[in-house]
Length: 448
Image (cartoon, rainbow, N blue to C red; front, side):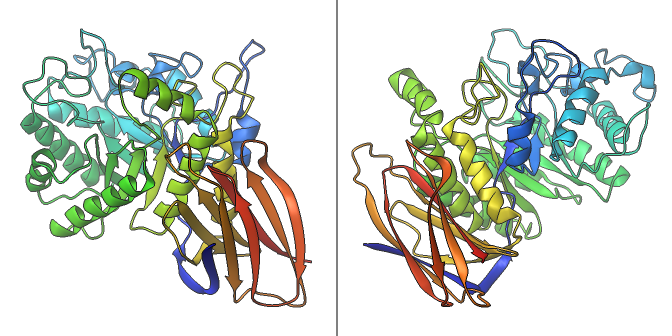
């Protein structure tokens, strides 16, 4: 029998936003046929939503939103003139995200372009002018410029996956220039925006290949006096340990280059066995099933206990890689929705506590506040792996007389449902559970 030990006396910082996502809820402003998932989105307590690839989805506003080239459509126009900008549908999209209680994480640049002719992923004609355009987008959403807003948008990211394709590639999907050109754009934009907005968090580069490689090292070496506030990167994997390893590699690189105060943000991730053929089809299928859900919960629990500042799932936008909501009827939740709801039961408690015994398929994290809550995930990439008998010992439980331990289960047959209750009068006690392959428990300790 495996054992997880949760010690509520051993605090280890705050519960971090491990249940952030890419993209906001689907909502409607008029009486039309659009179906909303706003209620479920709000109940999950999504803390941040990155708006990358939002322009792929028509009900958000399609190719009229978010991307710099869609807001500032004629690069020859005056970047200081409000008439040069088209904010209308991006305003609506961000308004919906904010209405959900979720804060926007704004990605400058463009969505990925898989097609043969590139339109918005090509390098801007004038890097400084592009930075000035970004400045005015920030002013519109945080300072009211151009009949804008005063949203508390903290994070502003420069570009996406410029390292995805090599300089000699004939099919550059995210950055049409060279690596050297991107480093120049990044530094010009970073320096300009930090000069204008020293109180905001400016960073990037949304690294596609999260390795200690030449592109990444040259990126860090290219940085001037102004340093990014956060370093963002991506990984898709089929094992929790692979993501854990990359978290540590990225943190080691930040430390090596003296960026010890720079946040490390994994802002694209999901379960992927392979990107082509049968493995890609299998990956897409599992993202929307209990296996994908258990992977989500396991990665959240593991990441909470690592040196990572934020985790942003790809993708809450209705698309093939959305394991949270039915992409045809978004009001219906898939299995992958429930880990977000379950982790939020820890996030709202705010103070993280020690959960030991992680590994070998079992991943736990815990928190305390008004309640004392623990999330435990069992994920194994082997579809023939057996169920697991697990003992969860709770130590130093705040208990003024008696407490109730509530068991909420996510598996093939349950959707984070209450399946068991027990009363305890001690400050230390254990729960015994048989966990089916790819399942998640939320344990809530509440005063009676």
